[in-house]
Amino acid sequence: MEIRKELTVGQIVKENYKTAQIFDRNNIDFCCGGGISLEKACEQANVNIDSLLPELEATVQANDPDSRYIDAMELNELCDYIEKRHHSYVRETIPFLEAKLNKLCDVHGENHPELFKVRELFETAAGNLTAHMQKEELVLFPYIRRLVNFKNGTTSNTAEFGGIDAPIQAMLDEHQAEGERFFEIAELTSNYTCPSDGCNTYRITYQTLNDFEQDLHRHIHLENNILFLKALALEKEIISKK
Image 1 (tube, rainbow, N blue to C red):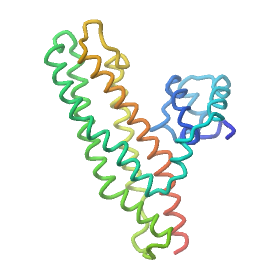
Image 2 (image 1 turned 45 degrees about the horizontal axis):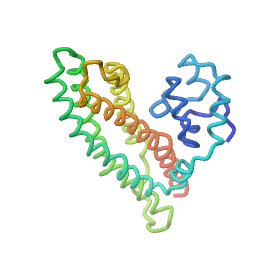
Image 3 (image 1 turned 45 degrees about the vertical axis):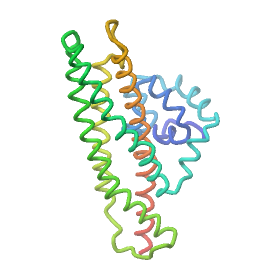
Image 4 (image 1 turned 90 degrees about the vertical axis):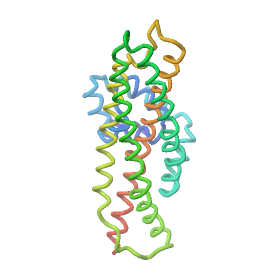
């Protein structure tokens, strides 16, 4: 893949997920903001695109079998992957982080009042993400699986197809909101840096919060830059043949 200025950030990361590290280092949002061109993203982040291009080019040329494997998945398989890999991780990790943040607030809250805001933000994110994933699992993903079934000839009913744009836009908006919420958490925690008086629980909690955010970035990237775009294209193709 030749890296061109007009390519979207999401297209580049889809080709090789290792480029996400480069965008992170340059404060370029590759998941929620993956739909804009590389040129525009660099302008917004005040990054010299000419200095970034060679690094991106070299990284894209390196082997990344995971990105190729995911891009080659049928959309129903990608839905399954997202549920089993990312949705399960979110559900398993939320109770751990809630308990640890409560403990940190009790023990360290007096000296570190920012912990109360971090806990508040995470509790809001936890509730929103839980509802968000349920909507995907009960409504959007089953619809995408039916699109795949029609494409593969296992069903011939096209009457229900049309209108996937609205639920996808709702999911995109919710992704954006949670991305911004975790940006605020990262700022409050100095990018998850344990303070000098922090205990082992403090360190583990911040590391897990960081891991949670990184997982969320990949989770959103898979949906925004791959699953949703392909689902929109597939529905459009099916409707055009009615």
